[in-house]
Length: 202
Image 1 (cartoon, one colour):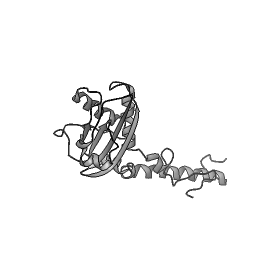
Image 2 (cartoon, one colour):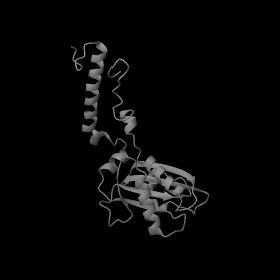
Image 3 (tube, rainbow, N blue to C red):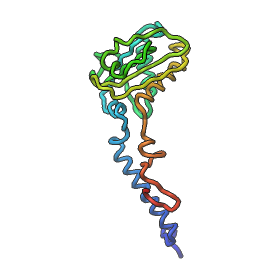
Image 4 (tube, rainbow, N blue to C red):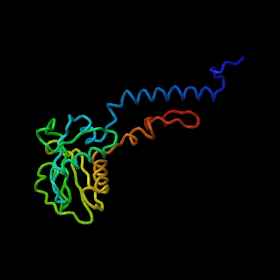
C-alpha cells in the first residue's frame, strides 16, 4: 500500500520542495522584518524615533482654535500612516526628542522648497481656506529633509471627512509604505518566484 506522505513522482516532489522553501522564505521574512520593513528614509526614521514625535503646524486656514487644529492635524496625520503606529505632539515639552520632527504647512501662498520647511518654517506665508486646500509637509532631522509631501484637494471645512482624507493622503506620501514594492505581492520577497514548474529565482 502506498503511503500518502511519500512522493514518488516528479510533480509531487516539486510541490513538496516548493512548500518547504515557501515556509523557509516566510521564516526568513519574519526574521528580517525589523531590519527591512521600513525602507524609505522618513519611514525608517519614524519607526526608530521615540514618541511622542514633535510636529509643527504652520497656518490656520479655517481661523479655528489653534489647540483644536493642532490636535486634529496630529491625530489624523498619525492615522494616515499605514503599517506603523505613532503619536505626534505639537508641544515641545511633551516631545520625546527635538528630532526627527514633522513640519506641516496648511495652505501656503507659494510653493516652498523642502529645505525651507526644515530651516525656516515660520517664513512661509499662508492664506485662508478657499475651495481647495494645499498641504506641504516635511520630515526633518535638524536641517536635513528625510521626506517631503505635497497634497491638494477640495475641502469643505476642518470637521469634514475630506480634510481628514487629505491629511491621510499627506501622511502616506510623507511616510510611504514600500513593503510590497520591496518584497513583492503579499509576504514573500520579490526575488522569490514560485512558477508553474516550482522554480526559485530568475
